[in-house]
Amino acid sequence: MLIFNNQRELTAYLASVSQNKATVGFVPTMGALHQGHLSLLQESVARNPITVISIFVNPTQFNNPDDLAKYPRTLEADIAKIKTVSDAIIVYAPSVDDIYKGHPFSEHFDFDGLEHQMEGQFRPGHFDGVGTIVKRLFEIVKPNFAYFGEKDFQQLQIVRKMTEKEKLPVTIIGCPIFREPNGLAMSSRNERLTEAERAEAAIIYKTMTEAKKRFATQSAVAVTQWVKKVFAKHPKFTLEYFQIADEAALLPCIRKNKTKKYRAFIAVFVNNVRLIDTISLN
Ligand code: PAF
Image (tube, rainbow, N blue to C red; front, top):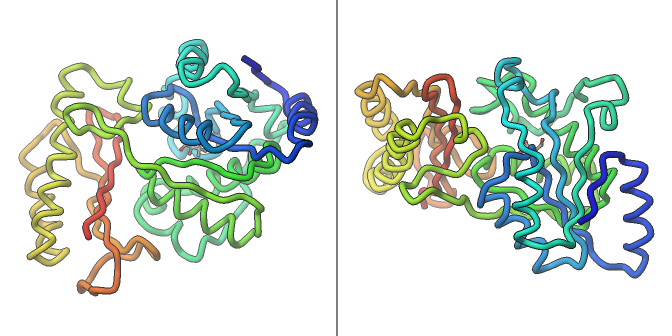
């Protein structure tokens, strides 16, 4: 398996192998890989002769220094997991310096307002960091297709918007959420939960599926109030937000409009670990 830590060597290698016009599929990650990431790799490997995965904990997208410090870094285990998908996957695991050349700062983006909703409200600067790193990685890897999980649905829409606005020659593919048997959305942050917390965190998906049922007959406001009550009864969980929004503009649903597709979005703290989830409502 080829592992590059240096963008010069990676780009030279990719230029040498992609001459025969083979498409390049790309899976950007921050490591601590789980089944969800592996499903993105499987999708890319099935459709592209060349697949690249990046493993890079991007400092500019963390608004909370403690979250950055505690983010799991498990490169060896990640490589073993990648090998279970294919030995031919190319790994790019750069240092902060290889990416930022001594200047780990974000570019400022205008994502037509997508960046001001939900995660954008609670994680100032987060999407400028995501935009900066994704654009830089696209420039380095030059993929034809890039695969992102739908768990971070707002991120997926923002990456699509950036690609369109900056006219980047890459097609963004959104892939379904992978869940634990109890419904908890797979996330690298789940590694920071105890067994008991993981089991109890099933309440997040359970509440989301019940919210979906209720949204068929109730207003977004009524469903939101119900979700707030559910979490108020569980002192171990702190609800940061629950929002029903349309998929395209991510604006809160005030009055249901039959022509729009809606989604519920949630962020919950479990003992300082921040978990997010989303579910399509119609
Ligand atoms: O979703 C993630 O893991 C990160 O936000 C990404 C897209 C790899 C950028 O650092």
